[in-house]
Image: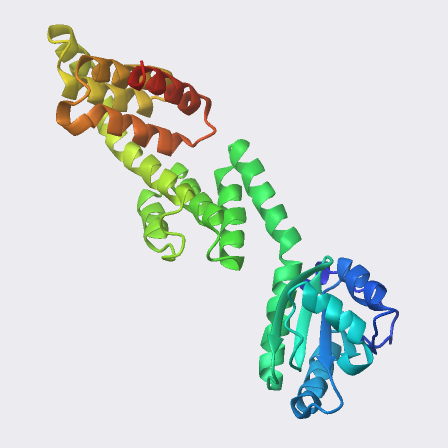
Length: 308
C-alpha cells in the first residue's frame, strides 16, 4: 500500500529538514498532500528531544521518502507555536511530534519514544495514509464483481479488504454474503460469528445475518408453498400460514408479494403472535438493505398502515 504514496523527492535527497514559520505552509501543509509529514517540535534546552530526534531521523530516512520529517525549534518560532496552539495542538511541552496528511493532522504523540516506538508510529501513519486508495479500490472492485454475478471474484476482493482492515464491517459482511451466495452457508455463519465485538452489531453484518437466516427457512418454506396457499383458501385468518407464505415468496425473490402478505396479516390481526407479522416484515427490510426499492416501498406501506 505504501508504494502508492508519491515520494516526489530527487534521488539522494534528504527527507529530513529544518523548518520554520515562514516555510511551514510549503514544507508541511502543502507537502503533506503527497506524503505524510512528521513535524518534530523541539527545543535546545529539552533533554528528551536530544534522545528522540535521532530516532525520528533514522526511522524517517529508513522509510525511503515515504514519510518526511520537518524539525521546528519552538523558541525560534513562537508565532507559529501560538497559532497552532490556538488550533488545539498541545505544544506547551516538548518534544511533541505531529503527523500531517492531506493538509490535516492525522496523529501525534508527546514525550520521547524509543526507536521501536517511533517505528510503530510511522508504520501506523503509513498504513493510514497509504490505505485510503487501496481500500476504496478493493471495495469498488468487490461491488462491481458482485453486481456482475462473479461471486468468487467479489469474495476475493472483500477478503483482501477484510484482511487489511479486520474491523471494516462492509468488508466482513461482503465476505459472508459472497460465501452464502456460493453455497457456503456454514462458512458464512462462521465469518459472522468471528466479527470483532466492536462491529458485531453493525447494520451491514445484521443484514447478512438476516439474509442467511431467511435463506435457510426460505428453502423449507418454498417446498410447502402449495400447502400454505391451501390453508389460506380454507381459512384466510390462518396467520401462521400467511407468514410462512411470505417467507416462501421472499425466498422466490417476490419481495413486493411477500410484503403485501405480511401487511395483510397485520390488517387482519396486528397483535397475533406478539406482532409476528410486523417483526417478520422488519427482518425482511433488514435483510434487503435500506436502499432496496422493495424495502423503501414496504416501509411506506407499513407507515401508512400504522399511522392511518
